Image (cartoon, rainbow, N blue to C red; front, side, top):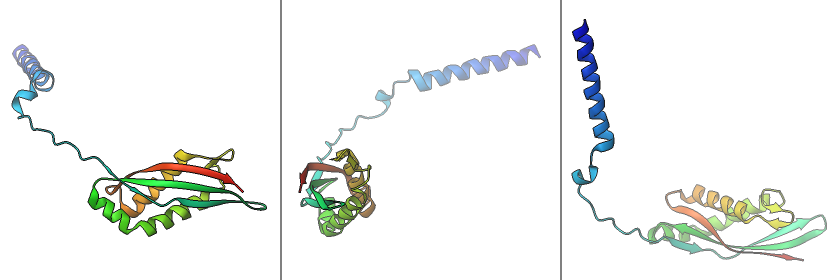
Length: 147
């Protein structure tokens, strides 16, 4: 019985030592050939015409909000896809923003929340085009003009 316990203990130590060597001490850089990393292509940006949104209050139009958006895409092929569907994307942006313009989701104390707009535009663009086509939405300019 003592021999069995000694054999099990030796096997556990050998196995543990092999595991430590394999996961912590082994030099992986010598085993794997180094591949030259290809430089990542810079993203392409597709800029849209300004979105004009009226802020309507109790007595009519109170403000005119103008937003210039650019979508970040992977390459020129993705940019062509976005340009081909630009009218549909513009319509979706207007519907999304106009629907929430009067809520606290977009306006904070009478000022446009640019981060909330960016998130909503990116979500709409990715829903239409796919996350593999549109990476992000960039807000180029926001202006509010009281009327």
